[in-house]
Length: 146
Image 1 (cartoon, rainbow, N blue to C red):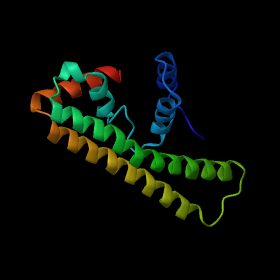
Image 2 (cartoon, rainbow, N blue to C red):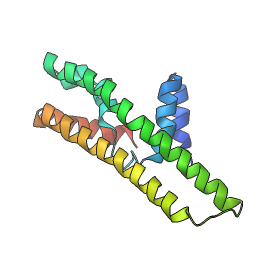
Image 3 (cartoon, rainbow, N blue to C red):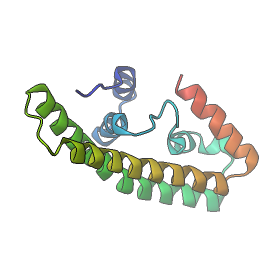
């Protein structure tokens, strides 16, 4: 069974989110480490560029990351969603076969790959920003997830 984070979906709708943004919010529910625990810092940086005082190099890097990371992580989340829904449907209808362990392992592998992309992105962001900028991003991200 899929549990969607309703406040996040409502917020996305109220903010006039595009269908791609709404999909991103929905797909985040398939993360191994949920955004409430490991926030998506790029959303915060995107929304607070001026406040963070990004220079031209940093701004260009942010633009590159905002294009690159979703193209890596969303297919993993979609695949995780597909596997999870298939497992759930089989379990709920009593059609659990001998391949359940392998399918659970595949789901775990997909979620781990997505988590590794997310963690690498955070490391990239941390290296790109000054210590003060990074601390400000963390503070803003924590405020936004509450």
